[in-house]
Amino acid sequence: MARPWGEQSTTRGQSNPTTDSSGNPLWLESDKATVDAVEDIAAQRGVPMATVALAWVLNNPVVDAPIIGSTKAHHLADAVAALDLKLSEDEITRLEQAYTPRTPTYYGSKSGY
Image (cartoon, rainbow, N blue to C red; front, top):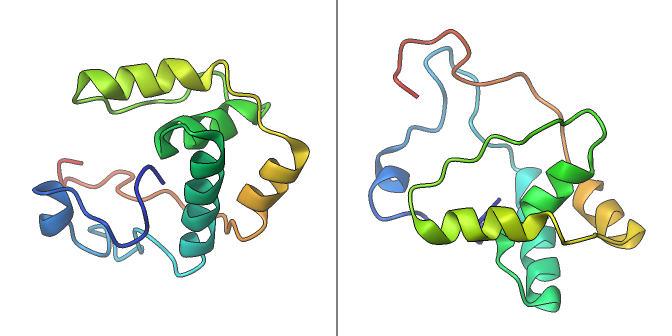
């Protein structure tokens, strides 16, 4: 959810499969609406999409600490900024409207992810 739908990173995004080793899909068509909402809110707020996504995760009362995969310094800055971003009820509704829960992927696989 940290980049517009369909945009891939230069290396990993081009080599990633569409399912995990057990055949579970890595994304669903319903994910596009959620990613689009993240992109819209980020543009309106003038912050990176990653900051909005992490603020949304932090808003969930069952999350103690999100796991971030930072490979660049700005990833950490985006994560820290999420601590101060308070989403409105309308924004949270927009983010959750199309969200579809699913089973974890790569759980117990030997794929290296």
